Length: 255
Length: 254
Image (tube, rainbow over all chains, first blue to last red; front, top):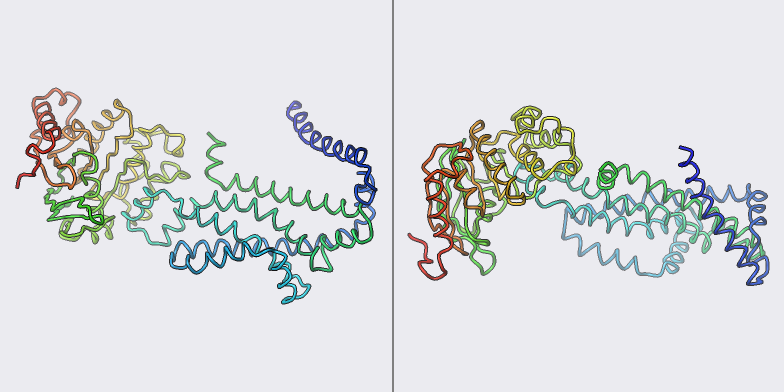
């Protein structure tokens, strides 16, 4: 028990030590000014001193990321189901989805900000556009991953398409949907911040943008640290939840 | 139990003829094994009977109705070589699942598993079961709604030799308790002769009836049957039919 706690402590301490070590090493060797690489203690000071401002904008970012994340899943899973149920739709949806995927985001963000202005809507739209594709592709693959032998069994039992979908295709797709969440979940926060940095007067992205113009390197780093932590937390939460939902890895754990 | 009537069934895949005018009448409660070289169309025939594929010509009737209607009425049970169990379901839930989808109560799931020698394993998921046990669960799930017709596609071929023989004998005993009309695809001649009332020997592709050999002995048959003259003679006869050199009498009679 104590050994387990000790090991957990080491696992947490080691990355912190290595990050701080590299950080100080960079300051000492590069000789860059403090507004480019502030010392870690200055960053933590900024995090505490500006906590009001940062919390306010953090909530803005989280709103955009959360709504966008949910909608990205609705759109992604919805399209995947459509593609499987109606293979004709592939010719219609896939080119559009791939085009959207390959248009530079900067252009999309610009168009969306012109269309929707600096609103929650424009941020959400960007998060959805960036996030739906991995969900769609993974879900689609997952829905097609059902074992043909099981599908034969269902057909011999004269199962309805809905029964086949709910009892076979969806459970087979679950591990694929879960792995898409690891991409889209943490990606949503990063994309929301990037969008704010480009077009918005609110959110963590905006804070970074403003701090940069004011040579407040400590604030930039404070926000970056916070964003990285958030993104990591979301990733871990999704990962843990995914392992519980995913019958494949759940099976491996129990085995 | 229902009879199966296969009349003039042919199947083409593009230019290739897989099955050529197959005829077969299976009586209610009869066990017919289908043997033949790889690619002779025996699995295709089974899938046509299961209404998973359509014949290019000819028809299959199960009892009074076409195969499609029989499938719609959940009169068929299918056993595949690879178990068609759901990886996330416990054995007992998998059996119940068949009954739920088929909307037929069939056999009590717990009793069925116990009689199949799976007592104490009802709560296990597929990855915790051995290959032989998994195939028993698979067969239990295929039988769960008590279909009058059982279609089996090489159910024991993925198992090792000892397990295969053991399960073959076990299946014979089970079918004595729960009589079904059975079509059984296999490439093991001994398995076919041990289990079947008649053995349909396929010609090489395109599949035709090379011979329909009777196995004149009562079922179920125990391990001793492997030394019985009927077993020895019938297996030898089928072996000769199948191993006949190509081109020598390769045409199907009739």
